[in-house]
Image (cartoon, rainbow, N blue to C red; front, side):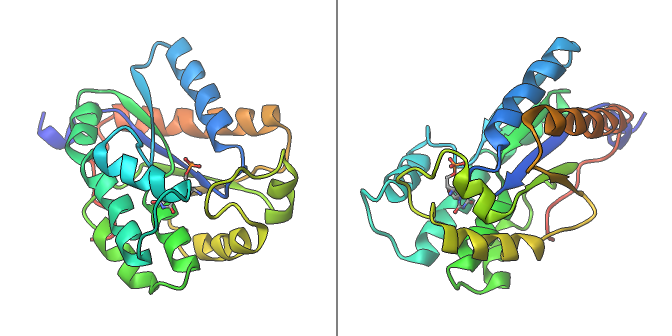
Length: 212
Ligand code: NYM
């Protein structure tokens, strides 16, 4: 058996606007896969536990100011610092559920006016997700859900721009999920979709790189 046909974990990414329900769905999917006995971990970006992540967290909570390019590169660096650990976990058979990834990086920064291709460039070479679950919700409806917090970007007009930029990133790994339905309906569709991908990775689908 060559290395590429070895069983591995699946990389499942959740994307969507703020308040689209990603964090709840990630938690439910984690419990479901754990219940089936799959080795699985829940990750999130930004990972605020690293020193780069703490700089990002200070920026998001308006405790520091950074040039738009600089914060974009910090978000990307925060993914790069986890890349080798990600590869090791996937190859060891652990499925990773990831709350936000490179698509958030590009959609949020390009919505501020940064060049779209420039935003994609530092993400090239990260591990490509097997599946991107895009929780699709009208920005107005997301804003109604308990309101936004105090962090940067949590404003309706900006979220509308982010939604437009997300749509430019859709590729064959994406599944668009109508997230304006109930939590239970969304959960059901998420579980059905993910099961198929976990099995194809167990059958030895090779890892590939993002945007390179
Ligand atoms: N965000 C997140 C970015 O602008 N770029 C990125 O690369 C990532 C991963 O950070 N409003 C933005 C999107 C969110 C904010 O995310 C924090 P969360 O999921 O609320 O912790």
